[in-house]
Length: 351
DNA sequence: AACCCGGGGTG
DNA sequence: CACCCAGGGTT
Image 1 (cartoon, rainbow, N blue to C red):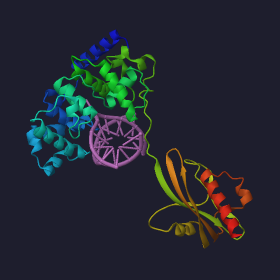
Image 2 (tube, protein in one colour; image 1 turned 90 degrees about the horizontal axis):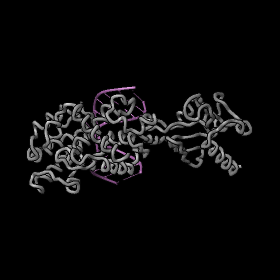
Image 3 (tube, protein in one colour; image 1 turned 135 degrees about the horizontal axis):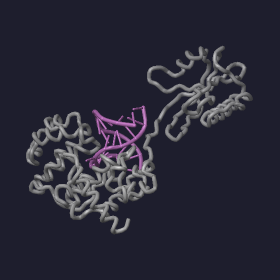
Image 4 (spheres, rainbow, N blue to C red; image 1 turned 45 degrees about the horizontal axis):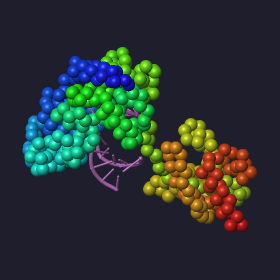
């Protein structure tokens, strides 16, 4: 963005904020302690949820001294229902540091305020800019979304290292005369207009300076990888061999993971029953001798299977039994191929 | 960098 | 149900 556009972007954003900002309790004060309380409450928590807690909390603890002197049990009671309860313990610890070390004055530099318990990069910048008018960045999820669109920043906002890109962007753009309005303007814009889904670009005060809007890419940004934590599942897998030398297989469901592929019977490990009991029950198998096959781990994109496998003699009229030649024609997922391989090796040993 | 930490609103 | 929310601490 050119210097001229940067200036217009700043002006439009700040003017829009001053005219359209919501009337919120913490916007009636510049008391750094009260701003601090609001910012901690707003961490990962919606505005509407916070409002009643904020008003009650400051009624109970109107100054840093009141909070410093509070009993923990009473303190937690005031936070009850807000969640992330370590926030309020850290807040009290930070406030006590301010009382003891800073003469009850919240520090005015990023370096000092950042040493306080519970004050991370975002909260430091928010308190500094909003309460003290210090031109410091306050990058939260809203700011990353807005700036990724305006500046076409394609860094993955799910990765921690991306945050410094956005912090630098804010420091390059920030209105040094009105850092409070600028920072809050970015957040307010993200909350009201530049929303995650279906942003209201027609109402946007900085639409003319938005790269994503110009290129019709607002729905593509921000880039955020899904942090679907891999699910770990443990199974016992049974290679059941009957007197004819045939093996018992089952077909997986027609939808979902490895749809319609074949597998040796596998039973998720549960504490209640030995899986062999469940196996013999579901296939009405008379089980004979059993030996262990090597355990293995199989990693899918989003799931990890830990498989314990066993070689068992068994007889049943139920289930689908196949010769090795027939199995060679069936679709088997790789982990089952591995187990089949170890079964063949184990049988060679016995022979 | 991954993981944990609560609870509620929303498409 | 998955995602998101004015994130930070711990490991």
